[in-house]
Image (tube, rainbow, N blue to C red; front, side, top):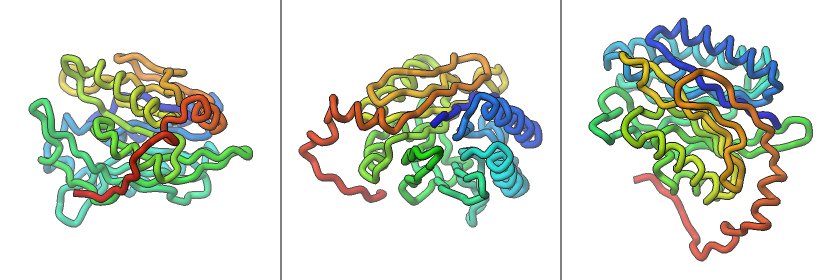
Length: 275
């Protein structure tokens, strides 16, 4: 099953961002993508708007964002995964990922659990934390079924979240991100994305925003598709927009878990609850 990880540069203009989604979805579909993944903050670049502006944008644009995601799924006969800002009852919006099937069915909705609070930055000032584990859902195309689990950016630093997805049957980990630039950050991202795939012997598809902000370098890019043995089979650099596409084969997970039965060899029986 071909999956595309879209790497684009969100701006402060939601209309401009939705137009970019439309163009990139067409490009990904032309490349044969059956699942198209857009990065975190595709609806609007978080680093470039105030708290009040973000809340207003969420109220005005979230429904249109969801509608466009469904439209693109139908137009290109693909599952589309996209991330934006969803209004919430307490005023601050959720940082939310949705997955929509070609028939308009919402397959999954994930409100970011781990809001970024590190390196002197905090998302708690302008977004609300989710309170449910990320979902796992099936995508079947051409007789192949992938079981996808969703994660969002800073989640990548919390291996327990990814293991919870695996324990619920995921064989493909889908990460959306707007990974903040800074000293060592690109190395962190590169290491952590490969580690999450390898330790779980699973595919990992990471779609990341690139550039943006006042200096045009707010986010690091490096979108990639990593195979179950930790090899990057398709990837993009840290500066330019583009699309990474790869054939994500569920049978490759079975083969990898035969030669590397780390999950079967575990001595721990785990349960998960949110603190």
